[in-house]
Every structure is written in structure tokens, then in C-alpha cells.
Amino acid sequence: MLLWRNVVSNFLTLAIALLVVLGGVVTWAKQQYEEPGPLAQGICLQVESGAKFRDISEELRAKGAISSAYIFRAGADYAGKADKLKVGSYLIKPYAPMEGIVEQLTIGGPSTCGTELNYRIGVNGQQMILREIDPATGQYVEAAKFDPKAETAPEGFAADVAKADTRLRVTLAEGATSWQVVEALKSADFLTGEVKEIPAEGTLSPDSYEIKRGAKREDLLADMAARQAIALATAWENRAEGLPYKTPEEALVMASIVEKETGVAAERPAVASVFLNRIARGMKLQTDPTVIYGVTKGQGALGRGLRQSELRKATPYNTYVIDGLPPTPICNPGTAAIEAALHPEATDYLYFVADGTGGHVFAETLEAHNANVARWRAIESQSSGN
Image (cartoon, rainbow, N blue to C red; front, side, top):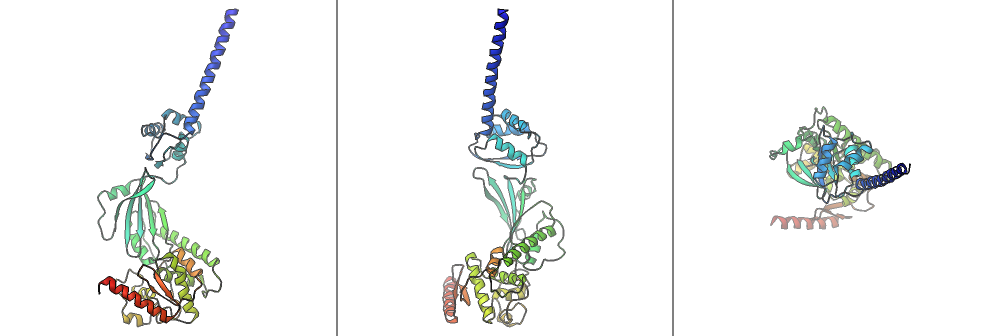
């Protein structure tokens, strides 16, 4: 009987010891799963269709992102996520814990690493810009850039764009016309469908649009129009008091003029004030961009200076001849220009001219303006070497 008691006692002691050890192992493993990992520099991890959690865990261990593939899999299994791996390219940040990596690989969403094609539609042309994430910094690095209408794509460009994980983006710059936008979208072979009608001028929002391969051009244009409608409605609802616009559409016309007159964001409210002050005094707007639009119909840049005959010719867009605003916008203005048109600076300015630095100098009187023009012409003369 005594021997039996000793055997039972030793067994219980051993069992308790094993439980203590097991508890310690579990606690240690839990800490390994939740604490910062060993990765000293970020890496890109590609999860392809059909990938297995075991293979991914071994790849992460081989790249130094986790200390144990077994603990990684066990933790994912305990969390019920071992079978929820999502396809994509993932930027694994330095010292990311296993728990965080599992969450990242199973929650899905847009890829955070790899290649991005940004098709930029500007006033003077288009650019295909291919960028790749540098895992070490987490920042995009430009890999290639070209004009699809004037240049041949660099070697390997098409293959990079065709990758399943390459993100596609269309960026519309402020000041492009609707005709320019439609023409540019026709050159984007990752889009589909025909555009039946050019959207009304001014109704497209300059912004950046992430799209899926094969998206319809008309759907993208509809998204641009929806964003512009929201921007205009919001700004109109919160507009300053005492403005002469009868409708939001008139404010959009003014915003398009402001957009074309200056590329300096801080100047936009002052530029808007000049035109509103001129309207208040019954003066003509006398702005070249509207005349140019009347000549080109928004179909590309003029490519030369305006002729005296064009400045004298009566057209709906010649603000040297007509009173007030032209009948439509002359480009697609950005939100900042819309805000400037509806929240102009309080000034007495009636004139402005380039100052030689990319901005403008403003004046309240014709005498001061003429002096500013003389200075600008002297700057032009010096720069041309005359």
C-alpha cells in the first residue's frame, strides 16, 4: 500500500511539474506571438492565389520576419484565421509582431506593397508613371515614366503593368478640359468601353482615382462628375455672403477662370477678388484664358500667343468684349479654386500681372498696374537676352 501511495504521489508531482512547464511554454509562445518581431528592415511579401499558410509561414521565417513558423501557424489557427489568407502584396514593417502579420494577411483590402501605375492627365499632356514601394523606407520610388502619346514604353513596362498585384490609378490635374480628359482616357488600355459624350466643361473633379483593371471609362467619368458635384454643392452651401453669383454653375465658371490664371494656391482668393471687384464696378474681366478657350474650344493648348484679331473678335468667351462671365467653365477647376471663387479675399484689387517668380503682383489702380507691367516686361526682356 505504501509503495502504491509513493507511485501515485510521484505521478501527481510529475504531472504538476509537466503542467507548470507546459504553462510556461504556452506563456512564452504567447509572448513570442504578440511581442515585436525580429525583422529589422521592411520586406514585401507576395501572397498568390492558392498559397498555403504553411508555405507563407516558412517564407516569413526565412526572411527573418518571424522567429518561429510553428508558433505563427499555431497562433493563426487559435485565432481562427489559418484558412483566411488573402491574395495580395503586403509591406511587412520592421518589428511587426506575428499577431499583426496574421491580421494583415487575412483582413484583405488594397495591397500595401509592390507596383503602382499612375496615369496622370495634365493640362499639357499625359504621363504613365510606374512606381514601386521601397520596403526599407515604405516610400514609393519611381521606376519608369513616359508620355504614351509621344513615347514608346520602356522595356519591361508592359510586363510590370500586367502583374496581377499592380495597382492602377488615374490622377486628373487641375485645369484640364473635359475634351482633354476623354482623349487621355482613350489611351489608357487598362480601361474599357467607349465614351459616348464628352462631359460638360467643369463637371469633372481633379483628384486621384484608384481603379480596377478593365474598369469602364464612362464609370470613371461618372465618379469624377459625382465628386465634383459634391465639392461644388458643399462650397456653395457654405459660401460667403454678398457674392454676385445667381447659381452654383456661375461660381464654377469663376472657379475655372481662377484655376487657369494662377498655379499658386495661395493666390487664388486674391485672383478671385480681382474679377469680382471688376464685376461689381461694371468692368470687363479681360482675361486671356477665356479668349483662348473660345479659340481652341478646350481641345488642347493654343501653342502661341493670342492675336489682336482674336482679342477684338466678339465671341461668347472673349471677356475683352463681353460683359461678365462667359457661358460655361473653361476647364475643370479643383476644390481650392472653387473655394476661392466662393470665399474670395477682401481686397480692392482690379489688376494683376506676372511677377517673374511664378506668381503675380496685384494693383488697385491702373497707374500702379502699368508700373507692374513695365517691370514684368523688363524681366521678360532680360530673360530673353534682349
